[in-house]
Length: 178
Image 1 (tube, rainbow, N blue to C red):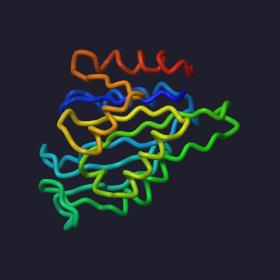
Image 2 (spheres, rainbow, N blue to C red; image 1 turned 135 degrees about the horizontal axis):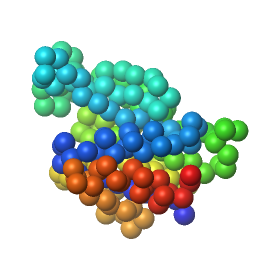
Image 3 (cartoon, one colour; image 1 turned 30 degrees about the vertical axis):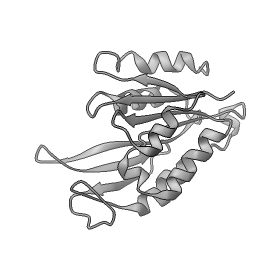
Image 4 (tube, rainbow, N blue to C red; image 1 turned 60 degrees about the vertical axis):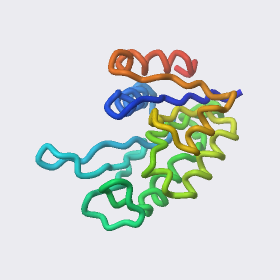
């Protein structure tokens, strides 16, 4: 049975830090997916970038983007979800990856990402498949993420500043992959 882990925490708790460190622990070809990071100008957050584990990058949301959709003060570029995020969720084993079972890392299942319905469908397919999944989610309630959090096959782990540094190594061991 596939492993499904959701890393839940408040903004700034270290969810992205933990999933990026987990990705760094992996050998090339062991995982697919994406991470996000803040875009800052003059010390102020003005947007978010999305980067696939394969190194493709795009601006997901920015105060200067018109949208729609808009999430808070940010316009969201759904084209980035279409071109980068959704394709990055497809596990295709390679000779370097060894066995057919793979790992998909998703940072994150948030309002900006979930504004693109095909992304929601891709995530549903991931959770229905045989691939291992580690994804980050906000602690705040939401229909889509609450549905995932309440699945019996999902392990929900709380991320905090206290545990985010040890979590990647623990996850690597837990997944029994390396």
